[in-house]
Amino acid sequence: MATRHEAVSVPSKDRGRLRAVPAEQNRMRTSRSSTAPLLPSVAVLFVLLCACAGASPTSPTPVGPRVLYVALGGSDRNGGTIDAPWSTLRYAIAQLRPGDKLYLRGGIYAGPQNTIDSELGIVPSGTGWNSPITVAGYGGEQVILTPPNGQAGIRLTTSAPHYLIFQDFVIDMSAQRMGPGEGGPDGVYLSSGAHHNRFLRLEVKNNTVNGLQFSNNNGNSPFNEVLDCAIHDNGRAGVNKGYGAYVFTGDNLFAGNDVYRNGGYGMHFFNNSGPYDVSRNMIRNNKIHDNGTNGGTNYGIVIAWGDKNTVQDNSIVSNGGGVLVYLNSSNAIVQNNSITSNTPSEGILIQYATGTTVRNNVIYGNANNIVDLGSGTLIANNRTEP
Image 1 (tube, rainbow, N blue to C red):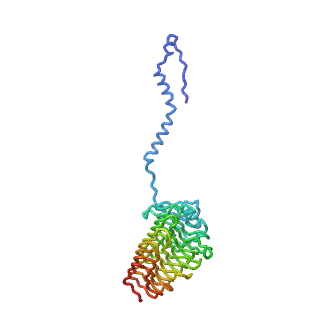
Image 2: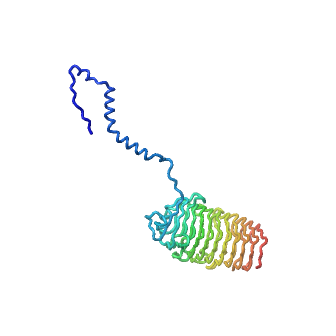
Image 3: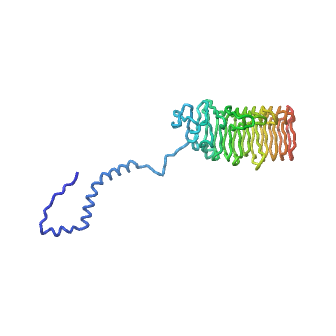
């Protein structure tokens, strides 16, 4: 309510004195009159400060690892929860951050949006094995990826993806239509320095060319793991085409896999130019059998073009040959394997290799059991009869 000011009659003898009002009094009057309208604003500010008591702008709410979901009936507008899952792999994977787990609900994931490809979409990385990103099939439900013609199931290249785990789903490459000699995408492909990735309990099958390839294009891609996978029936592109695994890189682990009925070699650790990067690979406890279905010299395992590769505790049966230790291999170890019924080539052939150790293997029923054309080879304690 406005203040009403009454007119005051001032005697004439006092008018001169009232003309000169002291400056301090003027300021005081002005201050008092201007403060009154601000009182409500001060009160509001006080209430807001009280309401915010205890909030700290330097202490954000901690964000931990999340469990997220994709399902065929979902939507990429959803929040990725089990009740409101996303619908495409490409969108879902782009949302992930270190420590997250993405579960794929059961079904057949087809179409270009349902591959895992760092050249076509964002594939983030983990920060270590204590905080990886995991993409997994949901427990008890079968998950099948069927990449369209010309696309890999998993391709990790751009930005050198790392500390990723892919587990418990199928990559069925039967939609590939490349003719003989035309090549095509691998089921799983790594290059450009992608490293420290784990492939666990995957099934990779029915490709025209290789099941897996770890390439040294644009940089070595080391320290990857292939564990307990089934890699089979790859290689519809002609003789010596379609290996279970083609590896140009080093420091990888292949363990517990079942590699069979591939058109070419079962596992091929080899390059034929450049640095000897195919080194320190560990190949152990695998079943390598019935490979070389397209004919040619297709051994179960080839190691070459590197140092200190190890082949141990494997079952290598009924391939075109057993183990080939080959060109520019040095200090390889072949030990404690069962190598039987491989023909028309040798159980173990060492050729153009130096310092190979062959020991404690059970090796019989092959076209020839052990043929050594290398230098500095140590052969000891191998059993050549059943």
